[in-house]
Length: 108
Image (cartoon, rainbow, N blue to C red; front, side, top):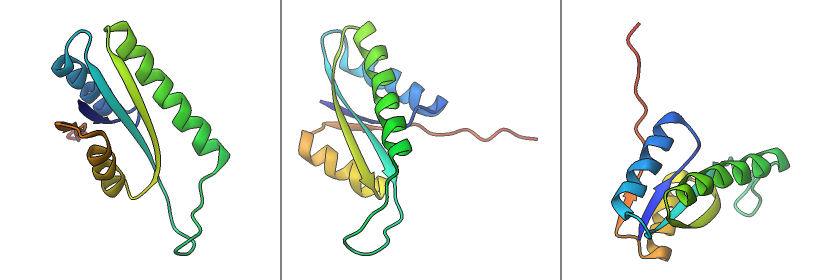
């Protein structure tokens, strides 16, 4: 099982494609999208309805790409610290590998 951290950015799309290549036809990929949040208190976190709708759309787009490549997908919706949520998802899914995108800075 491969876990791909996906936010819909160009770097994340490349990571998703790479994860799909690693899994191969008929493989399974878990895809996580994390809404970074600011905690108001230790027990209260704020996530807007708009952020949840965007998260659902992002994961639906990832699912479409993977289905076209003959893969199955487990989606994981999370909110919190991205690094902590990605590591927790990797443990929960027993992921063999975590795939994340790397943004590229353009020289000006």
